Image (cartoon, rainbow, N blue to C red; front, side, top):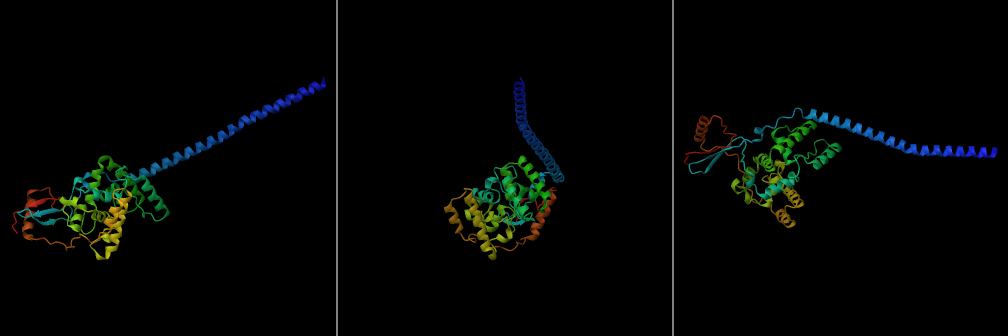
Length: 332
C-alpha cells in the first residue's frame, strides 16, 4: 500500500515537473517576442522624433525663401540698332544677350550641356537625388561646398533668386524653389531659361551670344554648329575665364575641358566613339573669330537722338534691358 502511494506521489511530481517545463517553454518565446516588440517600438519612436526634428529644421530653413517671381526669370536683353537698309549698327545694353527659343537650339548643343551639367535633367523633378546624396557625402567628408550636385533647374534658381553663398540654408531654399519651378514650367522652358541666362565668358550671356562672339554664328544659323564647337561651349560654365579658348594661355585647359564634355556625351550615348575621336582632333582655336576690343558707339549723336525719341514715345520701356530692335533712317 505504501509502495503504491510512493509511486503515485512520484508520478505526481514528474507530472508537475513536466507541466512546469512545458509552461517555461511556452513563456520563453513570449519573452523574446516581447523584447523584440520593445525594440521595434523604440526604433519607431526614435524615427518619428528624428523625422519631426528634420521637418522642423527644414521648415525653419525655407521660411525666408523668396517667392517664385516670374519677373526675375526674365533676363535683361540688349537693344539692337539698324540702319535704313536693315544692316546692324550697334548693340546697346549692360549685357550683350540674344534670346532664342528651344526650336533654335541645335540638338548637339542641347545634348552637350545636358551631358555635362545635368545628365538626368529630363528624369528628375528639380533635384537629382542620387547626385545630391553623393555631393552631401563628399561635403561631409571634405570641405563643405566643394561639391554642389546642382541640376540645371537649381542653377536657374540660384542665378535668378538666391545669393551665391554656400550655406545649408541657401541649399534648402534652392531645393524648395527648384521643385516649385518644375511644377510650374516645362522642361524645355527651364532649359531655355538656363541657356539664355548662363554666362560663357568673352562678354557672352547665353548660348546665342556665345556662338556669335566665339564663332561668328548668328542666332538664325545655330543649327550649323559643329560637335566640337558645341562641346567647347558646354565646357565653359564651370570656369568661363579659365576655359576661354580665345586666350592663348588657356589653349591646353580649354582643349582638355572640351574633351571631357565629349567623353560625357559618349557616356550618355549621344555620340559614337568615332565622333568623339574626330571632334577631339579639331584644334580648339579652329573657327574662332578674332577677339575684338569693346565696340564704341558709332554715329553717337544720331543714336543718342534715337534713344531720346524712343524714350519719349514709349514711357514704360528700358532700352538697356528690354531687347528692342530699332530700325532707323540712318544712311551710312
